[in-house]
Amino acid sequence: MTDTITKRRVDAAKPGETIWDRKLSGYGLRVSKGGTKSYCLKFRSGAVQRWLTIGRHGPFTPETARKEAQRLLAEISLGNDPVATRQQAAKSETVGQFAERYMREHAIPTKKPRSVEEDHRNLRLHIFPFIGKMKIGEVKREHIAKIINKMSDRPYGANRVLALLSHMFTKAEAWGVRPDYSNPCRHIKKFKESKRERFLNQDELIRLGEALIEAESEGESPYVIVAVRLLLLTGARLSEILTLKWTDVDIEARLIRLSDSKTGKKTIVVPAPALDLLSALPKMKNNPYVICGMKDGTHLVNLQRPWRRIRARAGLKDVRLHDLRHSFASFAVAGGMSLPLIGSLLGHSQPQTTARYAHLADDPRHAAAAAVAENIAASMAGK
Image (spheres, rainbow, N blue to C red):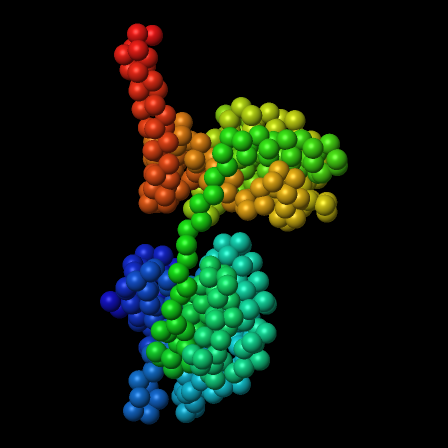
C-alpha cells in the first residue's frame, strides 16, 4: 500500500503491514506481527538491495524518521553504505556498550520498571563480568553457555539471564549489528523450573502472628509489620504492597485501585482486618506511599532482611514472602471458593495460573466426607 506516512497513518497501521511514503522513495514503516512499529529505509548498494531500520515508533516520530531517512539517502548518493557502516561500527562495539543502547532504546521505553530493574541487575551481576568487554560480534555460543552453566544452582535466575541475552542478540541482528541467524543463544536449553508450592497451615499462621507481635514490641518498623500482614490478608504481590500509594486506597469502597501491575490495571479487595491496618497506619508527611521507606518521600524497598528475622522467630525458615500470597489462595480454596473467584481476587490474567491451586480443593471434600461419615456412624451406634 502506498501512502504518505503521517501519525494518523502510523496509528492505524496493523500487525504485519508495511507502508511506503509516496514523497520520499524507500522510506517506509514496518509493523511486526506482534505490533511493533519501526521506520525503515530500502535502498540499493551496487547490485545489492539493502534494508535499514531507522528506529522504533515512539522514540522516532514520522517527521524525525523522515529527516533521518533524508540524511541517510544523502549519504547513499555519495556512494556510502549505511548498513556496512553500522556493521563496521559493530566490530568495535562491546557487549557493555550495546547493552546500554539496548536498555536505552528498547527496555526502558517498552518494559515495566520492575523488569527494567531486573535487566540492569542481571547485566551487572551475570553478564558484564564475563562478556561485557567483548566485541558484540565476537560472542559465541560457548561464551553464553559458560555464563548459564555457572548459574545451574539457580535455574530460575539462569533462565531469566538467558532470555535477556537472547533478546539482546535478536535486537543486535535487527539493528544490523550482527548477521541474521547468528544469535549465540540458539540451541542453549533452559533449565527445568520446578514450581514451588508452600502454604502456611493454621498452626504456622499462629506462630507467625505471635512473631509479628513480638517483633513490633521490640522495635521493628510498623511499616514492615503492616506490609507482611497485608500480603497475607489481601493476597497481593510484594511489589504491589511496597509501591502502594494512599491515592490508590479507597477506604469507603474498601478497594485498592492500581493503575498498573504485573497484569495491568488491577483492583484489590480490602477486607475488614486489612482495612483496620490501613486506617491505623500513620501517614508520613510529604510521602505518598503507604509502606514508607527510610528516606523522605520513598517506599520500603527491601523487605527481605526484616522478613528473615521474623520468619526465623516464627520457625518458618523455608517460607518466602511470595508464599504468603500462596497461603491466601490456599485458605480461599479451603473455604470452598471457586477457582475463577480466587483468580479474580489474586488478579490472575490467565485461568491456568489459578489452576495450580485446584488440588487443594480435596481438603474441604475430605472434611465434608468425615463429617457425614461421623453422623452415619453415630446413628448406626444408636447415638
